[in-house]
Length: 216
Image 1: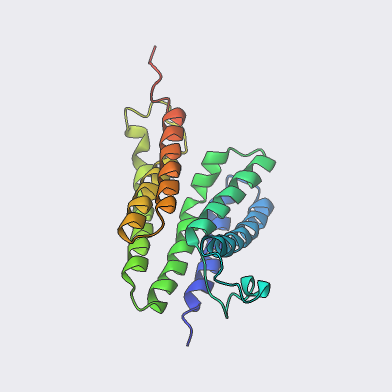
Image 2: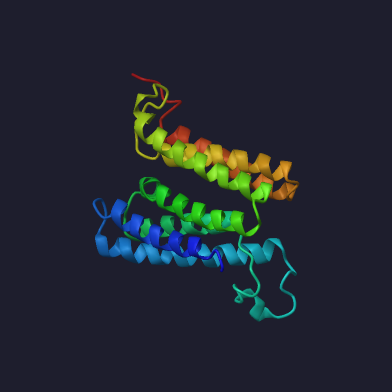
């Protein structure tokens, strides 16, 4: 029996948690629309990025790009970035604050990724590389919950604005992703790309928190 049940569970939990966690601060019908668009962008992005990064893997036919069951292959980091891009565009269209919206949906995103990566971990019979990425996702969940409760107590984060959890988690996770890529001998370009995203997240965090602003 296929372990695809975890993937189905991930999709269900994502849709449910997105609705439950966002409906109080955003229009409910738009939240439901967003959840399905975000899911679509995630899977399309994960599939396309995998095909581009491993270019030539589906050279037998262009239809192989759509044969998800017969020709498996997903880049979950690419899917996550596609999901975040969808969040940015959707919040921009609806005049919502971008970083707070991304933060509000971050736990939902991580739950989806954990279910998908858990399925991958079981299917690969506890592959060390997959297990390392799965552990990182679990750590991210704890980091998000910790920073959401504590960030206002950080003296150096002067503004106290919402978004600390999202940006700090992005900074730490992409920094670690870069090192994991080096450890598992993935493309150096991927590691550099992750480190650039980590640096951008840190800079955005400092700007959001007025870290370098002098108190009057």
